[in-house]
Length: 190
Picture 1: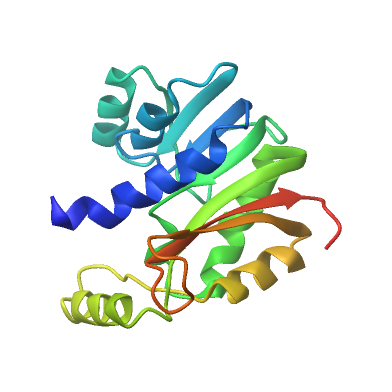
Picture 2 (picture 1 turned 90 degrees about the horizontal axis):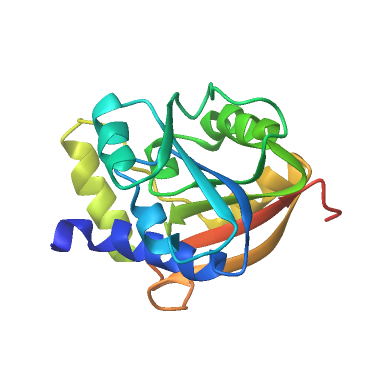
């Protein structure tokens, strides 16, 4: 379905980047668990999904994913409990970078030193994305905000992270990419 094309493409792009990683992964705002379906062939990876919707968690759990009720700002996990925190198809609902900071702080809290944060953004430089978001926001249902990768990179660098990988979703061109999946390392020199 065309409506789900970009979210599905984003999950597939992230899964391709994560194929070489193992360990304990928190899939934040996991929804129905599409990341688990893409990463299920991996050995040594344990994925725990967290979402604020019991209905979404129930569907994710039916695929075999371990789940926990929570949200991006308050997660029910101990500090340093994970090797990686993944949050896909969610951050574009934050209306500003300052709204990101508590979410990033919570992701940093649950991963150990040198742990990874994996996020995606929609590309504000892409004119189609800008128009799509403008049309969506006119409905005033909930915000969808595209960002520029450099702004997100600076925000996470300020929090003590280093960008280790960035992959375009779609065409690898700063004006044509639909979005980007980025992997950051906690506590890394930048």
